[in-house]
Amino acid sequence: MNENRGLASWLQLALTPGLGSSAIRALLGRFGLPENIQAAPASEVAKIVGADVAATIRANRISAAVDAALQWAGQRGRTILTLADTGYPRQLLEIPDPPALLYAVGRLELLSQPALAIVGSRNATVQGARNAEQFARAFSAAGLTIVSGLALGIDAAAHRGALGAPGSTIAVLGTGVDIIYPRQHASLAAEIAERGLLLSEFPLGAAAAAHHFPRRNRLISGLARGCLVVEAALASGSLITARAAADQGRDVFAIPGSIHSPLSKGCHALIKQGAKLVESAEDVLAELTGYHRTAAATTQDLPPEVDDPLLTHMGDDPVDVDSLCSRTGLPAERINADLLRLELDGRVAALPGGIYQRLK
Image 1 (cartoon, rainbow, N blue to C red):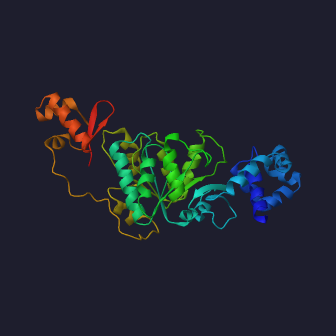
Image 2: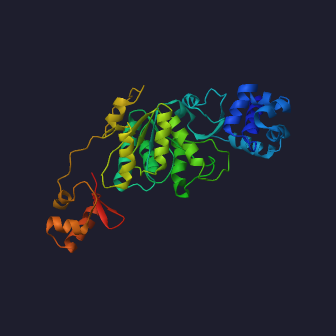
């Protein structure tokens, strides 16, 4: 009962309209626990947050939202962590603006495990998604928990790869933890809730909003010891996560790609700015500050399959049918038939614009 009263005080503070995280930290710094803030003279609280917000803190106008959150947290597998809890992730206490509350569904012990963030484009190429999944599985096998944002493309591939090994995964949401976005990831989110952890700083019922995702990104990087960017355009939100990681003193890694691909340009820019170029999981494990692997892991290429002649002519960069006709001397009908066969074999990917890419 006392524990519920304490959490209710935190919820009352965090759910107060107009009270942001910086103001909450200022109040906590001045008065201590939320109960002390609510008991303090309104005139003293107003010196920090203004008279209107100070009055709202004391008015108890949001009791229904507080009760709903307490009821939610009382169910199996659901937890609300406060800054004062021993289970609050220590690594988030190192960042400039740790959230006052964290809503969690799943395995809380993952918050105390060494972690690596993997992020990248929502419009990932087939090869990019394969890389994300393969790397995530290797890192998870080595004992790292993979942190990402449940977005389409690279994020989803990283979560799936990590679920296939012991390190598992944490999905940090840009919505309330009870709202899954995008909707097509409902089954993936359910699997993460069962075998990994869903996490959010936003209140229950909070819908997706553009300004939520940069805030979410600082938690993705903050929870991890390093951040690996798999694919990213120059305007990608993944670069926000990478910059947050650098600002937080985390290692930043990037996988290079074709000079012709827009989804490589963000990674190449990061590498020019000092991110560590990555070709294998070993490159990250060897550089990751303060981490000692718990098991062997590799993403080194397996011995290649016997190459089809068309694959040899394709090379590693995307290519169109006309170029392949020119390189091989074969008619378009033959090239199209061979491309379809190789695509069905999982060795070639069809990309937008009528171009194809060899898969490694």
